[in-house]
Image (tube, rainbow over the protein chains, first blue to last red):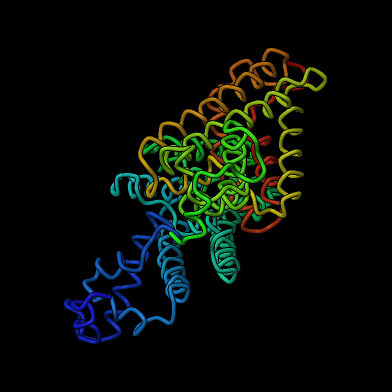
Length: 214
Length: 214
């Protein structure tokens, strides 16, 4: 460590008053950076720099990079669950239209960030071979949560007569998230929203829609 | 560099006679390691160790880690194109059954490697934010190649009356690879083949099959 960062160690960080704010700011910055680059390619330094926290003080807030990563996953999961509910429980739209609205919003979001940011859970899932094993269960639990929220929306469509009565909403929701993560990955790679739209179209083609006279 | 590796620099590597063999062995080891862990998390040392090549001699074979990565992508693409043709051009099976046979083989392959290895192109695509920019076009070209091979198979199904005459085989093939990469990612994360099967089922449900009397 160079003398300037040694000198800074322990001093309160520039932009925040309390410890809680700094922790939160570090987690928030972690969400942004990990959504873009994943875990392995992200240096703690980069996160600290984004928040203006001196290098020496990271371990004042987190026990390890792994502990930090776990909190970042939780923060992203909470943020994304709120976003999903905003769309998938929107009483103004019919259930299947809510899924389209979510996909349209995701497209706008990726475009806003120049297709650099994808899905933090997808990124970390892809890196799993190089990540701490406890992350696996955490990431799977997040996918299960999203799947349950999507399944509830599809069940509403089934109850409302949009989907056939024998539609397996759990399986359809699982299919959605499996493919959606692929679509986000591909949209990042192409720096274009076409893969999101192409997947959404394919997903809707795969739905067992109720006939017009059902 | 420690004295033992300095001493080894320039000596012929243990397990191979010619330079060409060593290069090929390094690329082959690179394919295995990058299919498991991606690019950022892979150290050159690990690849060298796998082949038994002394640390100092990497730059004798490759100009940079980036140049090595590019060759690894090309080698994987060539390997995978051969595999795809073996399935998607199999004259013994009807075209749509060939796609199922490919998916079944992928499942066996992932199981054989304990669900640690996924798709090298998917891995690197996910890491793109942290990778050299020229990789992007290389990876996209690989997806386009796979897509063209899949589209040809679907066109055979259309010609043979398995798919409706208005089926957009290019769009269906794009949908397949977008979602398939998501399925491979999820299968790695779950250490289970269920996501591959679930995606394949959804893909088949999405196909515009010709009616029984078409």
